[in-house]
Structures are given as C-alpha cells and as structure tokens.
Image 1 (cartoon, rainbow, N blue to C red):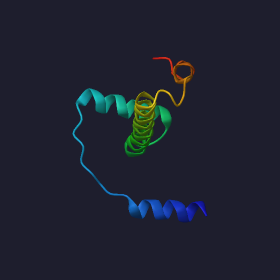
Image 2 (tube, one colour):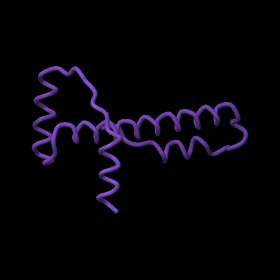
Image 3 (cartoon, one colour):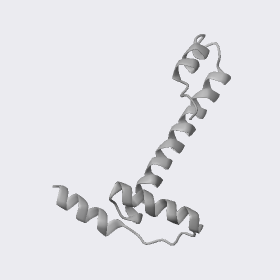
Image 4 (cartoon, rainbow, N blue to C red):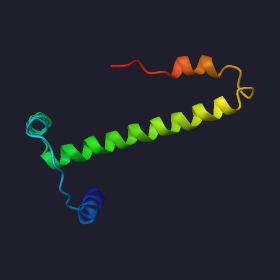
Length: 89
C-alpha cells in the first residue's frame, strides 16, 4: 500500500524553479542535513506546514468576522477567544 502511494505521489510531482537568497539556501541545506532529508523534501514539508497554518488563520478570521457580525449569538465569544489564542513565539 505504502509503495503504491509513494509511486502515485512521485508521478504527480512537478518540477518548479524558485529563486532564493544564498543565506536561505545555506540555512535550508543545513536544516535538510539535520533532518536527514534532501532539500526538495524539506521545502515540500515547509510549504505543507505553511499552507496548513494559512488555512487555519483564514478559518479563524472567517469565524471572527462571523462573531463580530452577530455578537448576540454568542455572548461568551470573547472568553473563548482568550482561551483559543496561541502564545506568540
């Protein structure tokens, strides 16, 4: 099963060209070595994680707008917002 998924994934991949500064390339290469993956795998995983975070932020913004448009629906929205807020790094 895993082999067929991997084969299917490899056939659907496309080659793209991305321009990066030399410092970013060096940092990516170092991170790839530490993670024991190649540069492409590192960039794929980083992009997947970024897209997940972006989707989460968009959904949170949508929900926030909904609560702002209809504040009477949930009187405790501010309480939930404080609990759900992630600390900044």
